[in-house]
Amino acid sequence: MPKPAKREAKSIELHKGDLPVGVSFGDSVAVDTETQGLNPLRDRLCVIQLSAGDGVCHLVQFAADDYDAPNLRALLSDTSVSKIFHFARFDVAIIKRYLGVNVAPLFCTKIASKLVRTYTDRHGLKDVTRELLNIELSKEQQSSDWAAAELSPEQLKYAAADVLNLHDIRAQLQMMLEREDRMALAEACFEFLATRAELDLGGWSETDIFAH
Image (tube, rainbow, N blue to C red):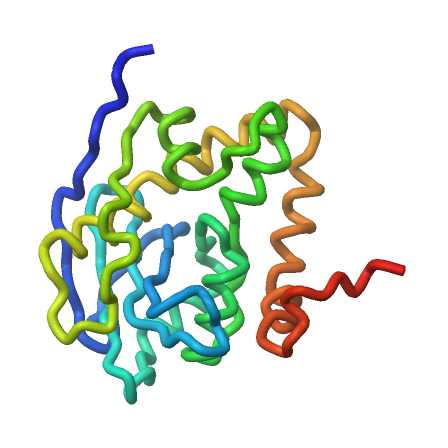
């Protein structure tokens, strides 16, 4: 296999507080979030990034006291638009807490990867992108301060990269799910994510409620 390539966004549009009127992502949008940490009960939502899979990334940056965002909330709750995530469990929970919407319908590439890439335990976005698309992602800004008033060019590029390839990854995983006859199982998992997020926000994140 040739050395993994790097893919950068054609353009990155930064918006404060909400998407502008008239932005369209077609029938599917790749979505990711950046937060102060990985505890949705403690760490606030700082950025949501979105892409139609066309190389253009829209980033919505939030101030600590302003999560009104009517245009963004309308998009995320629009049942005619499929939302693509990697590790949707966290994103759906943090969006529910701060924007008050249930994100649906959705496709989680991490769940899909675990259902069909059973030959590996590497299901992070970096590993999935490298194997399925032969594209190398940089994770240098993963632990940076996303609550900063001004985001650096490096942070913007990092955030964009996390959604830039999700449409292509979904396409590859859908073929694998169909091949292994696991698409229905994947879709059932995706539909349960809204409930899983409610459990996480309600304090049952570490409890297996299905155990004896």
